[in-house]
Amino acid sequence: MKPNKPRIPVHKHGPQVQRSHEIRIIGGLWKRTKLKVADKPGLRPTPDRVRETLFNWLGQDLTGMRCIDVFAGTGALGFEAASRGAKDVVLVEQDSALIEQLKRTQSQLSAQQVQVQRGDGVSALRQAAPGSMQLVFLDPPFDTALWEPALKAAARAVSPQGWIYLEAPVAWTQTQLAALGLVVHRHLKAGAVHAHLLRLASTDELAALESLTAADTPTDPSPEV
Image (cartoon, rainbow, N blue to C red):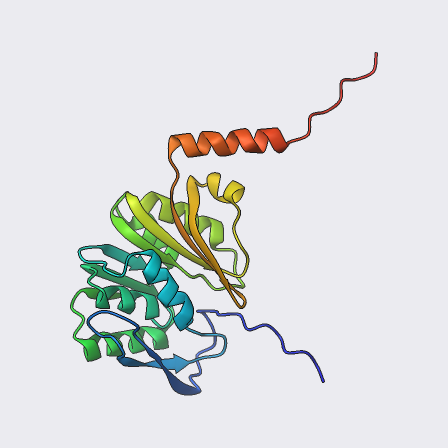
């Protein structure tokens, strides 16, 4: 028997929709509401356990926050944020079938605070006003090279007291993130998923990380005379 291949969530895939399944909103105004989700190869919403942990980290109540999910997929994160009081939620997705499903969910919930937008996620972040978002959701396709461009754009778009949620197949280190001006606030590994809650690093934090990196870098021995 061949070993099972790891399941990798991906948001971009072929045009065929095979069947539907459901996710549920965990908390807030629409708690326990079940939402239809197009079941496409490789597309899976952020697991319930991870979403529950994330919104515990965020303090449950997102009243007044401006949020953007630039790889929206099923919209699970964005609709959860809206359910918990977010003032404005932008869902960006490229796949036309997923856009239609997001619009149906928006209509089902009468979610006037949610805007569904078709387009490139990184470009949408770059076009956002600097410091305009209190919460940025980043869950790019795991098989692409969008991590660094997305994080750079998110660091520009997020407010000084805001948060960036990153879902990835590997853990991002403090050194990697410091190069982008970010630090890890919380981290969780659940199966093949690494969930990170990030924030902008302070000047002191960046200086401390630079010092640690320099201390860990071996020095070349003096040349023999």
